[in-house]
Image (cartoon, rainbow, N blue to C red; front, side, top):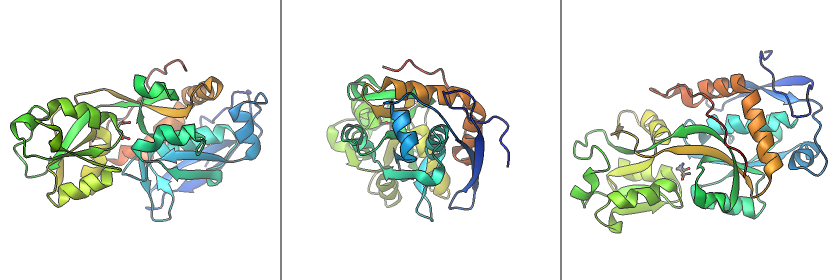
Length: 294
Ligand code: GLU
């Protein structure tokens, strides 16, 4: 299928080929434009990756709508599609992407260790992380929220957690929501941490925890997959701008990613529509104002 608003690489006009990609669940994901002969200044990450013809991208494997391992052993979701758009602008086709499962707590480490070339993983840009990572984006802005069992009428927002000190609250290790929720708890004993949110959702299902907290968009994906067992409560109470992590100091790569996002808003919208946009109540996002790379 031809693409109306094709990707362009920084080098200027390029030939475009399109590849059809399908989600393992059977839901079609958009065609991804792959630049045929992009040119980059030698020595840049873009030149190296483009020359190699492959890229390693860290993403989540357990988050419906954003990064979820499909039945065909390939991750699916909005983050995955964003990764494909960026790879495509370097001439790298989706089947040349090596996906690396990257739980929240290891995101900085995998970049520092050179295990991945970039991380697209519901990754909040914050000052602490900026010490170790350069962020492109933000490409989406969400807020922290709470998810409880559908029949829970006791917890309606973070203010109710201190009044219910026996209520266990689950989140993922090394995350902004896990840090931020502490101020709302009667004691640290209320907090249960796992490496991935899927384990929190399982613990909520079995009644081992009472609340799961993270970004509302992630929770909405779990609610949608839980057949009326879970619900979101209250309003989002933080702002979480999601960025794309690259090696600290790789400003050229970061700026290339920002330019690629800005140049491909049509592909961005299609990526959304085919993934997280399928979740009930999901709002169509617009690409937020991109921050300068630092
Ligand atoms: N966006 C938050 C963070 O980066 C929570 C989601 C996640 O753990 O990926 O900490």
